Image (cartoon, rainbow, N blue to C red):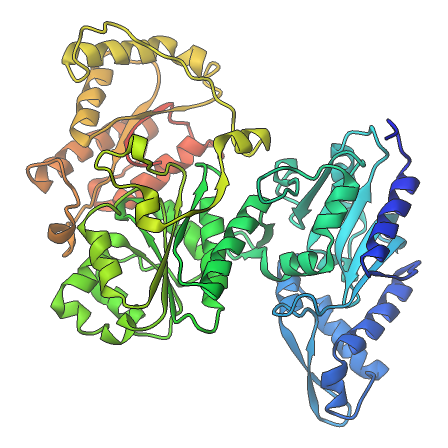
Length: 591
């Protein structure tokens, strides 16, 4: 393999690979040719629909209506148009339904490849290799000669966004960049940055870096058609396109295979920080499209259904979150036509165990239901989980976890496999660090006075002093902030008071799962454990919030706990330069 290889040689090699895979090569010099080719391919793709009206082609006037329809809107809105049918009125008054992308039979699209298409924008640009599906340029490939840093190709794409992309090129869904030995792909989202470019891998997370290997796998027409049809996510919250990473793709495919071809359960082992919310929601969305499935429930523990998580869920599936404390709302949704529901295990347990509620959902009981459990190592070894799985008679369950329970780390001999079945896909911390998907980390051990009891006042003061004395060194003089995870709420409160007494130079806050008003389900679910009564929890939390208000000039209280949570979340993310950051946050089972 040569150390250097020209762009021209890479380009010719890639085009040969694609034509060998049954792509049609089409010579397109500029935009007029592009539009003419699109008309022919659109007519070919919709030949059956046109034939039902005695037609083989669109008139120029009819095609101009198509182009006018495609012209408007943002890239995000165009991505929606790509996936919709267009009701086009023909010159004789009849209506045809034109399809731009066959999302359900993704192999049955028209695949073409072209190169060196010249586009006139603010400056003239020639694009290396373009993949057209049904005549629309949906994948753009930018190449650099072997040995050139790949980021140069990424930067070139960003320049194209600013200077030349327009018209049909605004329908691009995926970019691919390669220098022959390193190849990455990313969604058409110019604001995401280079860190959101990904290698393609096999099922065991081995990357296909070489362009020839990448092309053979990723550009297989059925694979590419499936990725564009099923694995591009239209993020409603940010109005942008996202594309799944390979391990997310394989995990969802495994779940779909189980749902379509068996009644087996299973779980996904993906490390913390690997985008579990996106993976699980894409799984829920695609499972809900299976005709035989009546309901898909995404089930979380209540202390995980915080304001940040709800916002993420809403962005993927607007209107699906059952975020109230009222079990009646869950019953209403279960009894409605809603196919995807996001709820909590506590509320679901209440719904199936109390006669007042479950008599309203006897019809759902016998329907085909798929449940996807978030963090399946939590809350699934007790009565709530048993109650739920015993209530539904035609149920399939899948779990996601970053920390599965095995025999060797089980406290009660129950394991994740025993509850959920076999592991369907793994993406471990070693894989994530290798992919630069999570930060690498350094583990430091502090022994201190080993003779002291771990929960003694002296030991806790020693730990607090150690943290404060080493804070600047460990956070690179405040470049990072820190979490101090504590095992219980009472211990968090003791630590918080100790830190205050030590009069630190850094800003310290604390938060734990707290319900300002106990819901009707609290008695059954055991929420707010650890306090003799809720008044004590409210008083302690309010004192912490009062300190926070003094530090940051806010005016939060236990009555608007959600706003307090959101404020902490923003300061910990350090994304808003106008917000003074929180240096150290004491937490129990959150963040």
